[in-house]
Length: 155
Image 1 (cartoon, rainbow, N blue to C red):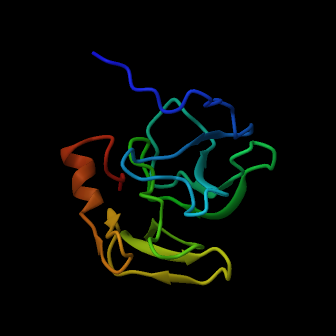
Image 2 (image 1 turned 90 degrees about the vertical axis):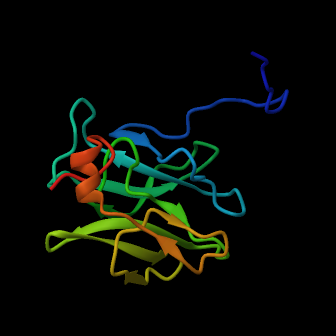
């Protein structure tokens, strides 16, 4: 197996700090904003158990330099450790993100403009957004939770 070096001068540093446990998921999504000046993150108040439908996850912005504190912009109860809440930047925008939420017993995507605070709820939960930011694809996260425990959202 060969090693691939990202860059010879890469410095690894911690960019989040207590309280809470911070993470980002899923692996095929990038947490970095298009400009690279902000990073998306999630903060949980516990770590050694699966989330219940009542466990809230904070969504926020992280300073990539690790100087500024975690800056929450929303919370959700539609999440899991493996995939988070499918938090991701909306392609073609500089300030919009999408994530999932639970409301009245169902899951729905939310398009959130971080500059204005405006939120628009979608009919269904979101799994991924197309490269232009025009379409999204979703799946049944409740069913996924029963078929692949740890990947869906509990109900």
